[in-house]
Structures are given as structure tokens and as C-alpha cells.
Length: 284
Image 1: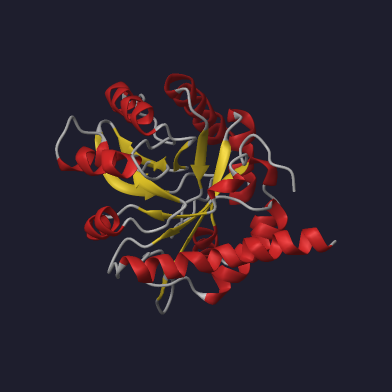
Image 2: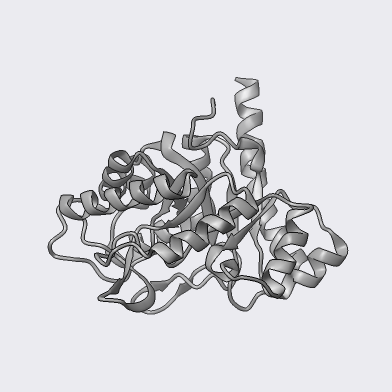
């Protein structure tokens, strides 16, 4: 499949989140890894250990930035100081793209520190798209927006979540960070077919994929990132790769983090799906 402008880094392969428990292993052992994803907000500082470690990582690995605090759906004005610090980090890492979540999380200067779902309305889509364009023009780097896992829905919604995501990225001329695990979690919590989601987004705008583990409870599923990817998510990932083509993929493991080797082994499972797709296309 030919690359497109949001998925033109097909050589990025499989990445891992750069996490504190693995710093010593990575810096001392220098393991093979296609790239690391950093949480931008952890490194938007003026100095100290975070930047010292990051600079050592950048000497040997490619780094992609992922944010958790831009709150593109909030109605508060964009935080210009946050954007200035973010732009300094973008120049430091030379990240090929920057991602954040399709959500809101602040109001009147108060922050929830959570990724809250939006009402799926045309008004909200226009609002978010305008903010994405402003962020992209300021940061001068392609922006990908990530679908979040959700546990509540708005009666005011005018469309399905995948239609809302599609509306936003088309209006903003942005890319998608497709979190397959989040789709599965939300589909179970809100009773929709996750494959309808995968089949009805603009595949040409998917620039990165997230996979992760989740936890099942009696009445809902929670996006916990604290154990290996479950089988239904792997099946969805395989479906996504067949539809989209080889795409930079990140394994998220953010709680009860095991050894680097264990996380890396789990991540490399994703590479097999991509290799199988390439072999199938070569044989066709």
C-alpha cells in the first residue's frame, strides 16, 4: 500500500513508551527499538534529569511526542505558554508528528487531569477543528488526534463517534492516532460494533496506532494499560493493519510496568501482523 502524507513513516515500525522504570536499562544496555514515544508534558521543563535523559535517548533513538494536556475540545482559550514550551520541545526532539487527544478536560482555568469525551455534534467538531488548525500553525508540525476510551455518552450527540472523529480531522486537515484498544473499550461500554468504527474512518489519515491492555469489570471495561494486549484487541489491530497498511504502532504499558524485555516482547507481536501483510501483498 502506498504511503500517504499522514502515514509516510512506514519505516517507523513498532515503538515503546519511554518510562522511568526503564531508563537505566535503555541507557546502559542500548536495546534495539524502532522508536520511543514520550509524554510531552513530562519533558516541558527548563532542565534537570528529564531533559538529561531525553538528550541521551535522542543521541541513539527516534522520538515521537504524545500529549495529554492540550484539551483540544475545551472552550478555554488555548494556553499560549503551554504551546511555547511545547514548540521548544518539538524543536529539541525533531518529532515527525505530534499527537494529543480528542477530548476536553478544563473549564474556566480549572483542570480535571482527565480525558473527558465530547458531545458528538457538528458545533463541537467545528470548534475542535479550529483549535487543531491553530495548534498546527503555531507548532509547525503535523497534528494527529487520538480517540479516547469513554464511560459516558451525551444525549446531545448527533452522530456516532467514528463519524465525529472523521468530521473533525477532515475539517482540521489533521491526522488520526488510532487507539485500537480505546475503540474496543468504548464499544463494550456503549454497545456498538468496533469494526464499524475501524471500517468507517478515513484510513488515509491514520498516521499512528496505539495498542494496550484493559481490565474487565462486571458492568464496564476500563482502559488501564497495566497488562498485555487482549485477544479481541489483537484481532482488531490485524483488521486495522489490513485496511490501513503498515503503520507506526506503539504499545502502551503505563501501570504495573514489568521489565523492558517483557514490554518489548509484547510490542514485537504487532510487528508480526505487519510482516504478514507485507508478505501477503508481495505474493499477490
